[in-house]
Length: 116
Image (cartoon, rainbow, N blue to C red; front, side, top):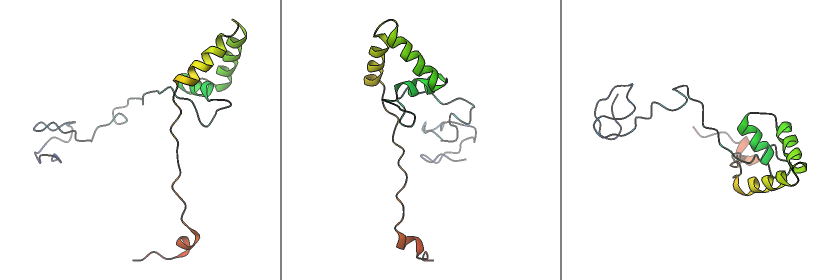
């Protein structure tokens, strides 16, 4: 295998070029068996009000209903703690990124044969 930056010959098991230090791109987190990092974000898919409870549930790996019940219990006893916690999380936690589908082709473009 050769480095894409300097052209030096490197081992296929190397993560970086020994000559210039450029990453080879052959090793990533999934190839080493590591789990992806958990990110605390407000959910766009499971939201009822702001997505705070769903985001916490996804982050902790528990059912969304359990986090909603826990937030309700905290809102009632001790009085107001759950409401303040919810609003703080609403302000601090970022939203999940939007997943936008690619634009659909117009009807005419779908029925015309592709040039070869």
